[in-house]
Length: 154
Image 1 (cartoon, rainbow, N blue to C red):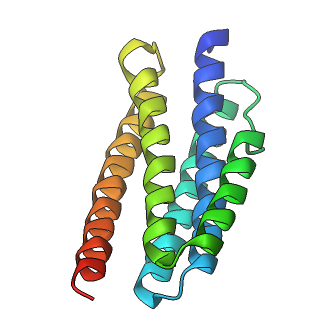
Image 2: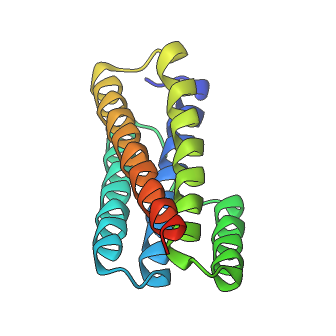
């Protein structure tokens, strides 16, 4: 049985993964770079899988999982559109916003992991997802550095 606090924490993770999946799908459509599109589409699928995995685990423990994204994330995607429209370096702006979104996701994972008393299956899933978000964030920062380097050299 999951406590109310645990359900809320896992639902927050589900929601942020739904939001991230939608955000990455939008990001892929907002850039011209084919490699970046592939990365964003892959990240979108991964985050959707994270949400589905957590939803399934919650259901296994008799809890009602979240199935929608947040209003805050919808506003973030609108901001991404606005920023990309104003930017002369669209790819860099979109990557920057993806970094911001993943930093927020990582903060949420960091909040859940230390204090949560989760069943082992959920603990394992959250730990693996946490590491993958960290890896993705590092990759995005590398892309940002590439775009900044290229902007300086042009």
